[in-house]
Figure 1 (tube, rainbow, N blue to C red):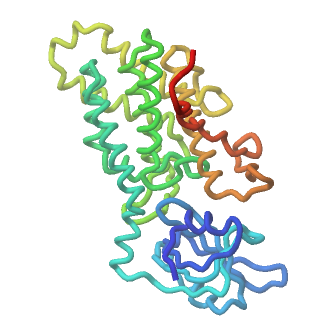
Figure 2: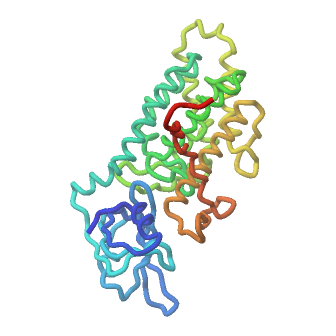
Figure 3: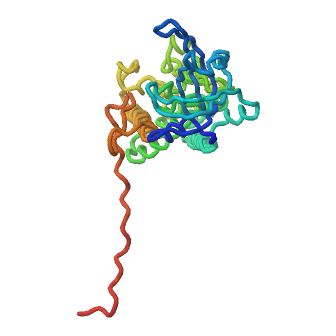
Length: 353
């Protein structure tokens, strides 16, 4: 039986069931009552890229083994997978605990995802090291040195987009590429400030959406619930900025723009990046960099959601996919790229007048 990831199983079952084994971590086991008063289980499971809620009914052969699972356990489920009433679900399945070697391999993630995130992290480092403003470059360097490990296991969200271990690195790297391109189109934009704003706009999520060191569980935290990532991001920047200024050379006092203005504009980017009060921003974008950052953030999130929809959502009609919230409607397959038909061959023989 083929060993597939959850995402691969979703893709394989769009049209018909498939036989597969899937390795997962148990995030939570909940015992729930049925309408008749008996018990069933709700298992919240995850791998490096996806999540699954699996229901195990009391008469299922695997019910006793599933009920005995501990939160955080690593398991393999093998059986026939299909899209059913409750979404993706297995039939005639078996369950076993993973061996240590299998657990380590699963935590590493699929090779292509692991390689992509490594490239993205390296590009973030290169783009921030290339900043001309020594204060912003220094601030980024301190952040990556202190929080790089935590950054690399943080998701960009709990749901919707880049909701996976290391997803925030992917989101930030793609946003930086877009921001650099837009800064070239709008040359009056402060490119250094914009790139730095991209790195720090979601830095509070390191305490709101961070995965456990040894798993795919994203625990809720009291500070994340009481504060949220925007206020926490502002606090992180202020703390790192104080540390940076304490070791700053005296020559920085004559830099233009003044250091306090640089800090204030960076904080504004963090506070305004959701774009509207109703979406959690305490202030609306009031600078060109804040407007660009807000839209680059929104574009990357929406396009990631579209890309995931094309991979895993069922077709409602030719080229029309079932909607995944919060997208505004049923996504339609994009127009294929134009491919030239090739050169028209010259006619044979000598040309005539």
